[in-house]
Image (cartoon, rainbow, N blue to C red; front, top):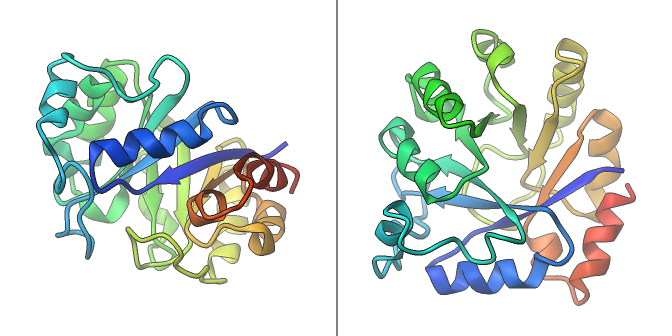
Length: 222
């Protein structure tokens, strides 16, 4: 059965809590998109809408919403993610996913995650050559393909060129878990799974659905 991970874009901590509350009973993990408005067009919490919750998380004064019920992946789409990875680890991340194109310090990021027993994944755009993964592949826990070069917004269409990229990744790294984020919904999920995806990361297909539990199950059954 395909793993389904809800993708959350939050403008503030309250919205993060509200969205996690909608899915926590149906999934083991959520993925929170973190964008700074520099590497991406739009900024998300905590780069906007932060009322000191981020500092409180890092200082372990509060916990992530429903942290005892669901694991958190943070997908960092920010400039120089190496500067904040340690903070996201302290906030309670179970996995950090870093956008390959955002940093020249990927090895340092991997080392920080491994030192804290936090899983690490690398995300890459459809236009990025997969050969850039080679130096890190033995040390990471997953690859996340982005379904479009435009990052950081729910509802972007799937660039169908990513299907060939997924097939190539599956053939090149047959044991590596592969996720797909952007353009994931019931009309595309079957082709994505057939291409070699193990993990469907979906935002609007879940949160815009009339029945969230059924939407998640429909994606799992692909």
